[in-house]
Length: 124
Image (cartoon, rainbow, N blue to C red):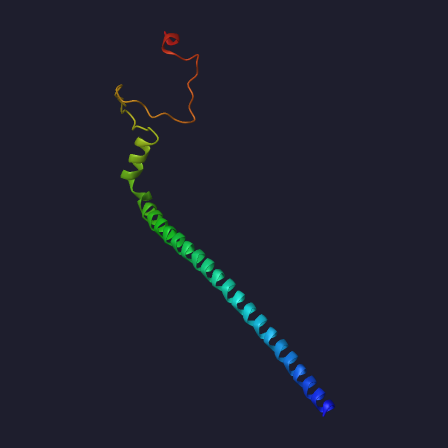
């Protein structure tokens, strides 16, 4: 009987070891699966944020395209060309005299720096 009991105990020990190993593998697989799901959720959130940023950028670019398209249609308009030439470039028509109000301060050009030798007294 003693040998039979020993055999039964050994079988139980082997079965218990097998159950412990299977349980450990199952627990490890579950933990790995949970970490994988968590990482994927973070990646999905990041991808959705990038997608939203790209959609906003696309909308801004589409607005800019519409604006530039409207501007390009106005390039052939002589009135707008004349207005730009007068206001931005300071051009005048032939035989036309430009009168500036001294009270108005001229817009400073960032590239223009007055020369110290040129002042009103030296012009006399």
